[in-house]
Amino acid sequence: MRAMVVQEFGGSPEPAEMPVPAAGPGRIQIHLEAAGVNPYDRKVVDGMLRDRMPFDFPMIPGTDGAGIVTAVGEGVTDFAVGDRVVGKAVAAPLGHGTFAEYTAIPADSTVAKLPDIVGSIQAAALPTAGLAAQDLLDAAALVPSQVVLINGASGGVGSFLVQLAAAAEVQVIVTARPDDADRMIRLGADEVIDYTRGPVADQVRAGHPGGVDVLFDLIAPAETFAELIPLVRPGGTAYSTTFAADEATLHDHGLKGGNLTSTGAAPELRRLLQRVAEGDLVVPIDATRPLTDAAQALSATGARGKTVLVI
Ligand SMILES: NC(=O)c1ccc[n+]([C@@H]2O[C@H](COP(=O)([O-])OP(=O)(O)OC[C@H]3O[C@@H](n4cnc5c(N)ncnc54)[C@H](OP(=O)(O)O)[C@@H]3O)[C@@H](O)[C@H]2O)c1
Image 1: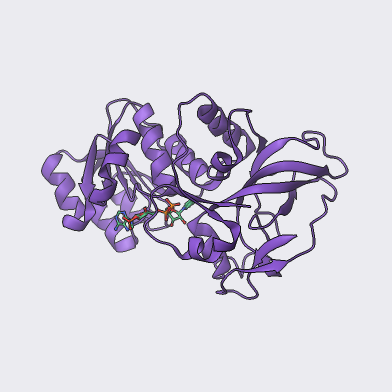
Image 2: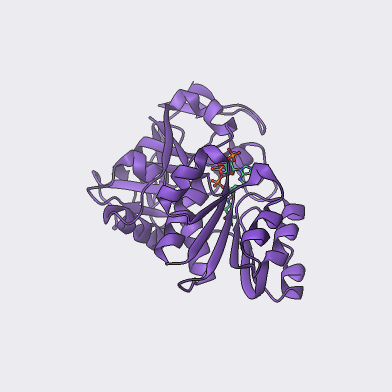
């Protein structure tokens, strides 16, 4: 099969012919039509998990993918050949990802059938970023009319999170560059702060002297996250998806939250797909590119939603 592979940690994906993975017991084989691109994929290629999980090389990167089930292994009852599905390829050993014509993943992992109305490109953009956004929403248990700040809202997670927060009837403040302000407003933001104009904390405080109830931070390193913490009212909530939160500092400020590790699995993926199918959630696709552009897609910055590789 056609695939993109890296030969070592830190490598750049290159086209290669690889064997088609068999379904195997408990697994489904998926003929992939599209693969979503996430910052996580680059981090895995660069070796973030090298001491925590086994890997196979040549490594096929890619976590998110959508396509058609072409074989089911022994013991699989929830899926059948011909099902249209979307899922995450995260089972050990890593290195058998979605930047390829086929993948084979456990049927009881984060995988779900697609509603007829959801296309495979849309679906492939959903799992990692959409689940992280939905997990943040679930964790924060927003209450209508709260003031919520989303730092780093232009990318994959943020473009889902803005919509989900707006649907929860809170006041949504986002940080983004000016070129993305209109799109942020269309997705549901009430206010867009241009983070290139000066410190975000100062700009937010100027417009909201009472601070915010909830901070979702999708971009800041620890030092910047710490600068934003005093904006959050005591009793409020602050989450980081980049592991920038110091839980002791949050506790000292009387805040809940911390570093969020997305745990959304198949039931949560089905919930997200339902929202997309019902038109409550737009899948924010920035660009589609051919599979052979995987290297450029993985190293690109300045996301405006999601990039999807078409296979
Ligand atoms: N913990 C978890 O379970 C989990 C799950 C999913 C994702 N994540 C992590 O969460 C982070 C965000 O993911 P993502 O998929 O949304 O990434 P992404 O698609 O790359 O988006 C990041 C966005 O931040 C913007 N940005 C860069 N510098 C900024 C700044 N100083 N202030 C405000 N915005 C800035 C970028 O655009 P401009 O540079 O043009 O502004 C880009 O649009 C990544 O580190 C990812 O690995 C963690």
